[in-house]
Length: 251
Image 1 (cartoon, rainbow, N blue to C red):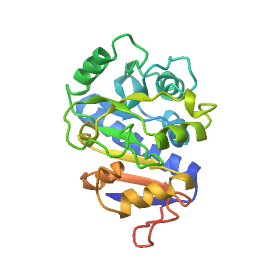
Image 2 (image 1 turned 180 degrees about the vertical axis):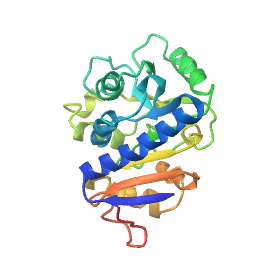
Image 3 (image 1 turned 90 degrees about the vertical axis):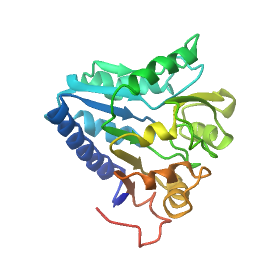
């Protein structure tokens, strides 16, 4: 694992976009396409904005998979991760191959089956992820399932996760936050050739310390990223504020 600390959220986003763009270009050059897993959440906005402005990416050769989505939330809702990815990445960049997770479908299990089958059909070049305030990875809240081989799961969201969504102003109060979601499994995320974790802001500082200095454990789901051979964790000074100086590598 490589951990880098940037001055602020903006410089973190730009650096992460440069890293991601280089991986995407290399995958297209080597195999004719790039397969990408994309996250949402406010922590990803600067990164996604910078990525879509990157030059010399043939977006027509990029295939995007959805990391997670609420169950029962229409795609028109501002908090819908489908809407965020469409608005901030897919439509903006002109990506034709997008596999959305329709959490509002009549048969969510069929959605999971179809998208999971497409995801498992070939290797993923890079996964963009964040870390939740409770240490979650995708919507795998603690204690996360580190064992299942299923590409996607239906998960129950814990109170800390749901309160984070209210804190980010996606919902007026916790009663409006869905209680279940579709989440890519931990093992599926870990199958990506490269993982880029983008984790800014002081509200993530405790989770960063828990996951990157504490024990590797399902109670700190994102701690599993430390076992991946090609993980890059990008922090800003706020999210890295509780880490020991030995871990900090200023970018």
